[in-house]
Amino acid sequence: MDLKDLGQHIILPSSYPGRPHNMIQVFQDSMAIAHYYRKVDIFLTVTTNPKWPEII
Figure 1 (tube, rainbow, N blue to C red):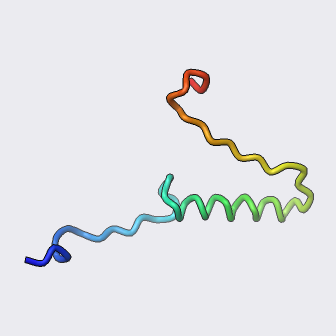
Figure 2 (figure 1 turned 135 degrees about the vertical axis):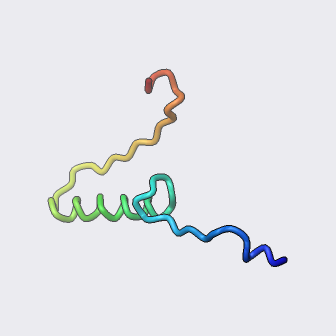
């Protein structure tokens, strides 16, 4: 029995959140928006933990 033959291979789309491809796509979209408006005073990203009491 070859383990490669078991199960199915699934390729997730770039819209699937949390995957590296999605993060790249979101970054590229934000760079396109910044390029469209030309003058960007600040480019801010925020990373949070939803389990923090301050976030809820």
